[in-house]
Image 1 (cartoon, rainbow, N blue to C red):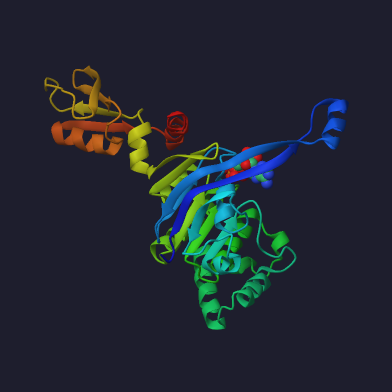
Image 2 (image 1 turned 30 degrees about the horizontal axis):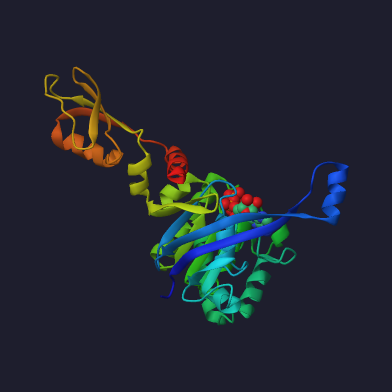
Length: 331
Ligand SMILES: Nc1ncnc2c1ncn2[C@@H]1O[C@H](COP(=O)(O)OP(=O)(O)OP(=O)(O)O)[C@@H](O)[C@H]1O
């Protein structure tokens, strides 16, 4: 299907040589190198529907960039299959390149010594974008990302935030249905981060693009993604919506209520336990693995009791994800 991403049992193993310790070991390694296999990605399977934004998450070294490199055609898998907008990326690299845009936050795809405007002109020629379309798109990207104040500047002189905004525009100039973003907002200040997030939301909601995003920024995940895939040590440990993941692993929320009637009978509600009860003050918390999310709990408490004040403490998404890596990874 146009715009969808299908990943089936995808694996990538790297073979590297290791140096034995000491001088004698070093000499032995020269004559008889010791080869070790690193299973960077192991049998991962997931789908991204057309027009969906999926966050691919995992700790450092989990295998996220390796996965994106296979889906952009930079790396060939050791085994398994992938299709991006119907194309097998590592077999038909050129056809795949026309369907995708990619931004790697840590390095630019632009020409270091050229002004931004000239880089865009080269990309227009490479992708054979008609001039009028190119002009219309540039205007749209300028409105959303505020590029025109620096597009006569050489790429090497741009700040990080300016450079990544240009990279984003460059990746989308040929109007690809699928976009890969590997830590696009790394190192940006909060204002530029918010501008980039707004841009990405616009690309998904208004333009219907499919986005696969990796990030270590949980605020970004909360703002942009409904669904996440977690990988750890190269293996997929979880695939679900943020709500499902919070319900499963975010077991530390509390709802603190002050009841209008201090003599009201206080009872546990489905999936919600009474943690403390002192006169009119009651603290509710999750009861077991099937507990609702904090927002559902808030709604249930308000429906059941007349309250004069209510507050909630939500588990930080960062803590929820940490619990998910550990518990799901060990399961
Ligand atoms: N070309 C390579 N040769 C050998 N090992 C590699 C190579 N590329 C990646 N690896 C290893 O594969 C594992 C996964 O790396 P990858 O870059 O995909 O992780 P990541 O999830 O993107 O990490 P990060 O969040 O730190 O960017 C790591 O242990 C890494 O050292």
